[in-house]
Length: 237
Ligand SMILES: *Cc1c(COP(=O)(O)O)cnc(C)c1O
Image (cartoon, rainbow, N blue to C red; front, side):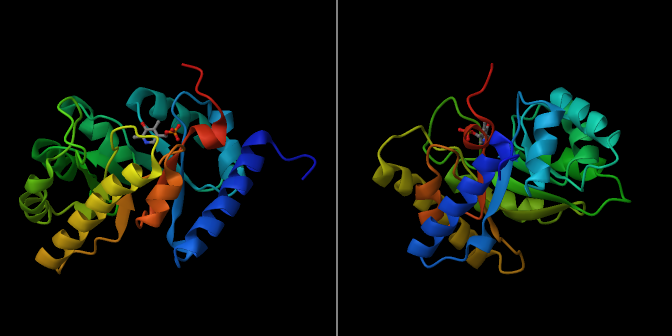
């Protein structure tokens, strides 16, 4: 490991922690995707994470993401990357998102879902999406209200170029692990209700947990941890 980069060491350490926490909760660590969130990081840093085995990369800002994708495409050595869009979506940005990502976690209104389906190129597989849920009921946070989710999912399941995979949330920041778990438990219960109501859907994804609340999210069933700081270090802006 003497030549390993700090990013590779962080990823190795995170995988160890995830394995331990998963075992404590009788879960299979392989069912948990480590999504490296690379907002504000360079294409070179993304390439380091990919080389360390993180093939799922999350981006928040479209222009920044497109620039990194273009740069990485010119590097012939870079292995396949699955790009996830996880940031706020303006409706004039949906075409570029539909064309350049495999996943969108932050679908927060029907208009965005309809546009993403219409604009997803036919030659690509359906776009995997999660509905973002405002799980802590914050007035200024985007996302469907929990009581809107069942109707939204039914409407979205009729859109041909989208594949609804589950739910995503960014709960209100909270230091107390017990409180962190309560928010994640709510999202999990909502997913379970939705799955019962819509048995034809395969809702295998709970996108929840970041650097500061990863353990609580794993305890409550997260299948996708969105991790920035713990992989790349403190953000520079
Ligand atoms: C930045 C960001 C993350 C990662 O946060 P860290 O605390 O740096 O791990 C996860 N999810 C979303 C939606 C983000 O914007």
